[in-house]
Image 1 (spheres, rainbow, N blue to C red):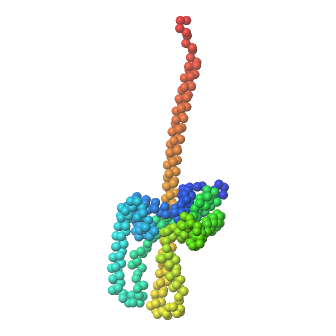
Image 2 (image 1 turned 180 degrees about the vertical axis):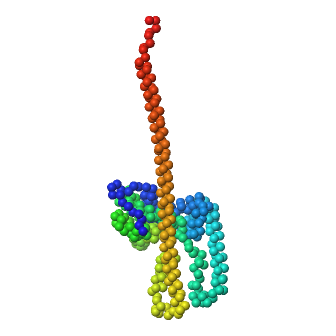
Image 3 (image 1 turned 120 degrees about the vertical axis):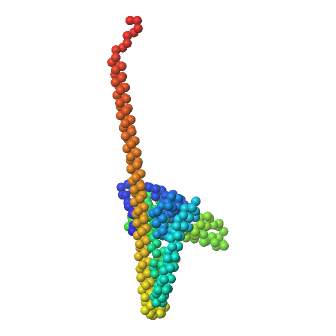
Length: 373
């Protein structure tokens, strides 16, 4: 799915708030897109905790996502005065989790007593899917909001690559991180400005590599030159350039990469391999169950992806309607002002006509006679 990149051949794209946000972020250390996403995430969480704690729709979405992801949950304590709103939300979420856990415990006991033969046949993997406490969990709402913002900032980077002001800002920055550039390559390979943006990012990465090289050389005991501040921070910056800002791209412990690795290992080591003994009927059922569970995991991930896109589209629709409402209000105000000026002009014309008639009357009146004549 693309980022909605468009060009304006005649006059170039118009600059809006996302452009200026990205240009300002170029003055900060690290990837400017990551910086914008972290700031936007904090603002989203602050607004949610301050204004939407008791909103039914917000509560329902948070219950469906089991609260926030690890990244956004770790951001909440850093927000000012976030304790009260957070306590209201997490108390409600924990109530739902406690109810699900107790239900799962009761059903497990009934399953153990009712079907011991199935447990012996399939082993520990026979736990039904409905027992999972995160069953049906959707994407973290803050992540859905941030994903839509990420698409906008990446679209800005493509639209304005080659713009003198943006290029100067990017040249002063540390460049986009590799994961964000990789996403641009995957989603917008045909964008006409992509080669120039790639070349500029590569130049910035090469500048960082030379700084790292100088930092390493100065650790030689024969080198007497002092380590500069830029060299001292270069290795931390390089970590962010390679992996993105902390939290933005998560980890591979339980993500899609880990699931793919487990699936690859399971597929590579077949039944005839010496690393795995020939299965009996029960083991064949377990392998089939694992395959179906992998497929279910893939479908769940696709559903989460679709939910995120739907949330992003919903946000765009809301923003468009809000912009339309503001424009309508502005237009109504302009119309009212125009009507007022028209009435004022009419009054002035009336007064001018009356003054003109008075002047004519005074001009036509006979001159008064002098006294004593």
